Amino acid sequence: MHGSCSSLFSAFLPIVLSDLEKLVLNAKPCGSPNDVVPPRFLKKVFPIIGPHILNIINTSLLSGQVPREFKHAVIHPLLKKPGLDSSVISNFRPISKLPFLSKILERIVYTQLMDYLNDSQLSAIFQSGFKPFHSMKTALVKVMNDILIATDHGKYAVLVLLDMTAAFDTVDHDLLISRLQHCVGISGSALLWLKSYLLNRTFCVKLGSASSSVAPLLWGVPQGSILGPLLFSLYLLPLGAIFRKHKVPFHLYADDCQLYLPFSHSDSLPSRPLLDCLTDVKAWMAKNFLNFNDRKTEAILFGPNRFSHTPDVDLAALTSQLKSSITNLGVKIDSALIFDDHVNGVVKSAFYHLRRLSKVKPFLSKRDLESVIHAFITSRLDYCNSLLIGVGQGTLSRLQLVQNAAARFLTGRRNFDHITPILASLHWLPTEFRIRFKVLLLVFKSLNGLAPVYLSDLLKPHVPTRSLQSAEQLLLSVPKSQLKLRGD
Image (cartoon, rainbow, N blue to C red):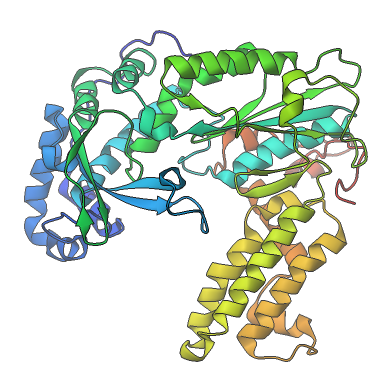
């Protein structure tokens, strides 16, 4: 926990009409079914009604009060994953559809809050959820890089995935306000505004044409809002202090928490720091009305090589939760780090969607068909593919088969036509080179302030020994490693 924080942020600043216009015109036209003026129409008439909207926005910012109409959400239940049983309520995620203008107001507050948090270095470094330049990819790259370095040095590493049930919906408003005041340093009209934003919220649930009665929202932060994820991450700030106290490396993505701990085979009880940390985490969550789900908490063990992932060591209570394969932020990770399960899942899903796309191909132009292929196929091939940099050629070849099939499907070429000129005509990099490109792109972003600090800190400049030529070329130092390719 950051401890007591002196008052540093006391008021939100009003904005000018030109900045408001940019926000409105660039915002997605998503709002609430109860919006009096549909977002698309509001954008068109903004030059006429803009000054009146500006008055509403600035009055709210300066007075510390959020209009009551801005705090009513129409809940749209959305299945967490395709194929889940729709008769089980817990399989749905409650997405809040909020008024369009309320999102504009939230965006203004969010921008000013983020500027303050970044300038004051109060934002959690290892929280990658809903932050600029951060993503699930960057979070996974950081965690897996640390694990690979540990195993390359001859150590084992255990990774634990913590599960919080309905975490966004159980946030206590009083505790959150106290945290914003004492840990983040918010006071004055800014604190009044955030109190007004959280209190006296209402919601109703709508399915098709049926709608429930209006009910008060006494706890939680709305999913689907702009401010909700940021407020939730600030609610979790004290967790970082617990992890650091026990010297357990961690990484958060919203409410997904990863803990990992390298250890040597000679350690008598390697899981002790992790178990003590989990005990404190459970106690903290209970005090903060967060539901720690032991049944869904999973662990996986990595060894120095692909054949040594089940050492004869005592992992105590974690032994029962060990899995040979886990799904972490959408990527299936196996204990041997060969990613066969992940690739098999991608291949199966991609070919399923290719078969479905064949039914609509006659109705689409080539340009539209290519867009659809990128949306359903390429996006799956590219998702977190930076993690596949060291896997074997046999694994990559299965992904290449998917890309080849998609290219032939788009161009109408036969199966036995040579694929290289087809890919070249489409300007598609082969799968292996796409993976290398993604890694190089991450390096470029890390060097130019377009990536999280935790990735930029991994890059070290090369110290020239013979001449100044290497310094002028901006070379990077390549860390020594024992294993050339982990996946081979």
